[in-house]
Image (cartoon, rainbow, N blue to C red; front, side):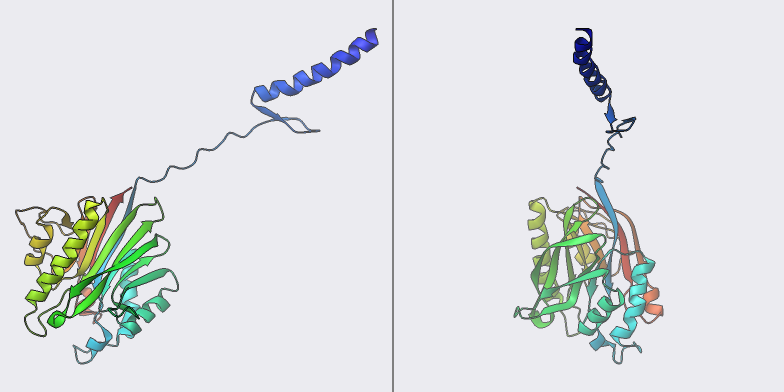
Length: 295
């Protein structure tokens, strides 16, 4: 009877020893010693906001290079223009006058690290890159592409790109509209500029009414009159400062190249680098701003 009792009790003792460490937070390795279980590591929190450098840059179209101040071809100038993006750590840019050969040169020189989004032509058969949005693939992904028809020289309709992006760091989505409103080089284009701005602002207000964040970049070919009209409703403000609302206070340092955003965008810096002119890269500065948007 004693031996029989011992055989019944012993397995129960082993079971008790095996279960006790598990209850104390330890694990049993078969055939090995008891080892403490590794604590679970908390997942890193998703950032609430995302900050990036956004620019507007009229690179002077290749077809405009001939006979204009000795500019080299658009493709040849692109090497230096890409260098300006690197210099200012630009992650998102609205290009103007980016013709086909220049667009190809940009993609080749950035070696797959950037994406370029133009607007569908009015016929819908081709993509027009003269106004284009470019972004670093490491920082953003494309969600949706659309366009807005504006009135260019002589009232001719041209589509400009409206692009929705997602920030890879926190999943924030926002829109960017990039434009080139007509200059007076073919006569007074004030009427067509005004109509273009009306169309652009109408689309931005519609997006904002649905809660969207919007950036607005471009060569507006206008200064104070554009600024006051763009910011009057209080929906937009400029990275270069000034007012936002009915009482217009113009930021005089700004030329005709603009970076604006809806009021939920915070701008912490703004710079117009005019060395692009002295180096024969463009007749426009590259304008760069630091933008922060929240989820």
